[in-house]
Amino acid sequence: MQNNIEIRNPATGEVDAVIPAITAAELDVTVNVLKKGQRSWSKVPLQQRLDCIIEFGQLILANKQELAEILTRETGKPITQSLNEIAGAQNRIEHLKANASRWLSEELITTEGTTHEKIVYEPLGVIANISAWNFPYNVGFNVFLYALAAGNAVLYKPSEFATVTGIRFEKYLYQAGIPEDVFKCIVGDGQIGQRLLELPLAGYFFTGSYKTGVHIATTVAHKLVPVQLELGGKDPLYVTDDIVDIKKAAILAAEGAFYNNGQSCCAVERIYVSDKIYDQFVEAFIEEVASYTIGDPMMQDVFIGPLTRPAQLTVLDAQVKDALAKGATLRLGGHALEKNGYYYAPTVFEHCNHEMELMKEETFGPLIGIQKVTSDDEAVRLMQDTTYGLTAAVFSSDEERAMTILEKMDTGTVYWNCCDRVSPNVPWSGRKNSGLGSTLSAQGIRAFVQPKAYHLRP
Ligand code: NAD
Picture 1 (spheres, rainbow, N blue to C red):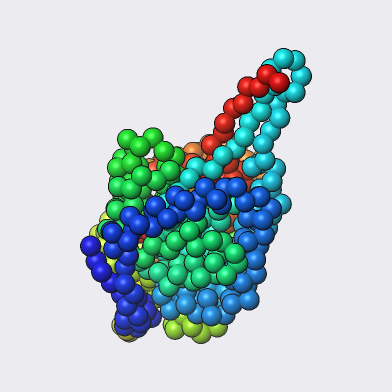
Picture 2: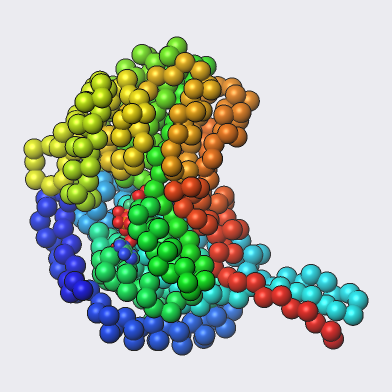
């Protein structure tokens, strides 16, 4: 197994730090420590557990500048977006504060007659949270804070591209009163993740790619423990011909496609535009994307920084080559930038079709394809022509029309006149190759407990 994790700054390509990975032997010891710790933690009253989580949120906010700089240095996320993520992830804590008691407390079903019945929601035990790097606060909090609130212990494996952030989570959780034998940050790459699959854990909560997700689900299937997969997407946006403010729609669509350099699971990945407004929309879209400031992600005014992983540059180049070969029109970008670090020029293609990889395969970068459509039926057919099922969006001035389209989407989330958005109040879930199970909302709270039915004859 790899002994060290190199933390590279994507803005320079230089190694910033080298952090020792956990060894397999240390991991075995840790699991046993957490098993014991979890038993005590599950007996701590819910409100006390929540108080620790609330305190953790305060510590994160109090240290947000330092934490944002860490996130930007290790992922290349522009600093304003790092700060936004840190502030935005607090709504998970607010959600838990307001709702955990309702969904985790025991339920008296009947106290009449000879047999009384109730349901008790017990924690799962020691769970693994194998996480991604693109929004480590959002996707991390969705799992480990909800798991801790429900009385579980957590082995949190941050992505090897967000290791320092993961270590800080551990530091501030401990400072907030979460016992050291209840949460551990497991430093390591995919090999350590693989080792977690071999351990006797009570659940696997994964955020990452379809390929790794399927591997995890099949590897642990024999354990018959909960497996939750938050995977990738190829999220479509359809702009109908009744849009009044085309410029506004183009600005919003561009932000949905290029925020965090397109490295969001729910980023807009392909755009369909009605032929009646196609030219106007495309020109407004190009104008908007061309105005983005590209550069050092530590600078306040930068919207496009480097990609997090150098390997993605190759994926983008391949999609560009494929689109050009199949007749798409390149309007912006189409190449890596000649500077240190993993920069790729924001890239826009128009006149795309579904023969092209960029309309079918996850791009996960600053590259978007636009396709003209002549009817809602055609748009629906193309939006549904995907193996993924995370989100789908429609921009339209007509609510009924939008609803008719959105009802047909086989996705966990649909958006009307918005996109690239997650809220703790509603479930976050993927269908088809986008995943299994839900985080957030009541479903996301109950994901970390198992019901026990009591039949009682007093
Ligand atoms: P990835 O699958 O490469 O890695 C994810 C995690 O899995 C990392 O921590 C990695 O170390 C670990 N891992 C790798 N191999 C493993 C193995 N054999 N066993 C166990 N763990 C292993 O994904 P990524 O590049 O980090 O993340 C990008 C993907 O995540 C994109 O597809 C994106 O759409 C998806 N994503 C989805 C959501 C969502 O909520 N649906 C959110 C964020 C990211």
